[in-house]
Length: 118
Image 1 (spheres, helix red, strand yellow):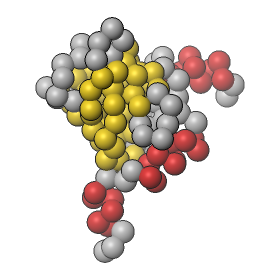
Image 2 (image 1 turned 60 degrees about the horizontal axis):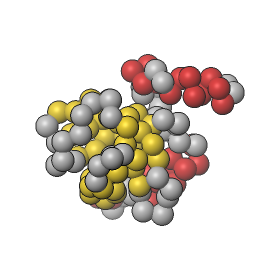
Image 3 (image 1 turned 30 degrees about the vertical axis):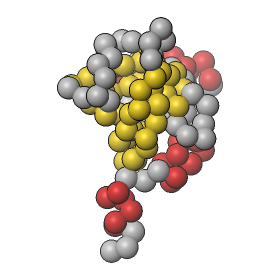
């Protein structure tokens, strides 16, 4: 698959989202809305094509945002859906597999940490 096909596939989030593994994470990050402010969010799951976050500030669906995870450049994403304070977001460009693996290993969810000691 070439980069053009990957970029095109990323636009079809309803189809692509299930092709990639979702990792449970616990990341305190920033979301910036163009012409708006910066808000702290908690990213609770991540795939190469998007993420789910908890955010107490209302952001309309289809709005473009920029996610900044500590130690990484900001990543452009689109709000695909929301329900109260939970948001599903689609990356403008999929994460490279090595970047995805690094983020998931560096920020495991608490449940993942507890099972390591069982």
